[in-house]
Image 1 (cartoon, rainbow, N blue to C red):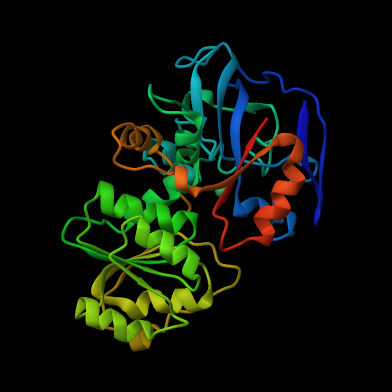
Image 2 (cartoon, rainbow, N blue to C red):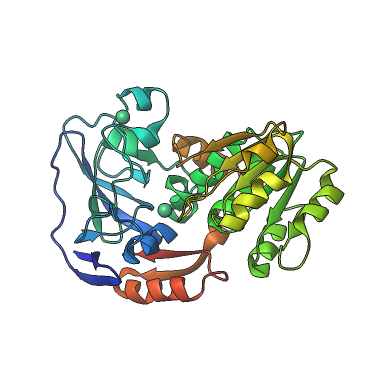
Length: 343
Ligand SMILES: [Zn+2]
Ligand SMILES: [Zn+2]
């Protein structure tokens, strides 16, 4: 089969690789129908993820058809249409039992990071009963593609921030995750007002189309002043999905006293909270890598027509042209949200 291999820093290669086989009784082999390129894949290639193994197949967000299952896989059989969780988790340890699957002691982010991922034709998925979710009727592979990673991350931000109907929510960052937080805050939780903040007007326009009540560009206005005009005291909930020192600072500045700030962004450096100055503002901070236990729920919402993430796919490529897909994705940051890849 063809596979996109991470060779070394700034070096990827599309080449022949052996088809995976069942190694453990809980494994399943999945025939890939659609995968995506994620910003995390670029981070690996650029060398920002030292924990990533070299010579592995990249990719961790995908859908497929079950090809084969290990003898202990109970809930899936060959032929099932499935979406795959970007996280691998055992379902049995302390963290899994408490739904903190991101910290599973037997798993974590494995696919396309520690073990072979999905930018290929077949993938071995460990702990298949937990890593796979059946795609319900009436939903295409394309519709279901993002529940395993970015849609779940966007919903996770909304969940961390405890967004409800009374809330005015500020979302910093209108990339794929921020846009997913927007549609989940508006359409699933029914947030009263959502304000989306980004420095890219293309992305802000998409946010507007997808239901943002206000869009603000910090390069064009004073965000703190605008926020006071819109909210009086600041946002009830802030979801930080941008990941820069500026967006980090903005998060606690635009939150009203006693607000919840949810960080779903990844930072590349240490950042400092000015706690003496903030004393008495009584903010609640939560951070997280997604505990993705939401896939079935999110598929159901897609099936009901409450949310839809198809707009995130800016372009589709065949696996044969994946190197071109990577350079398109990298060169058009801002205009391009996600690229889908089909074997
Ligand atoms: Zn990802
Ligand atoms: Zn576990």
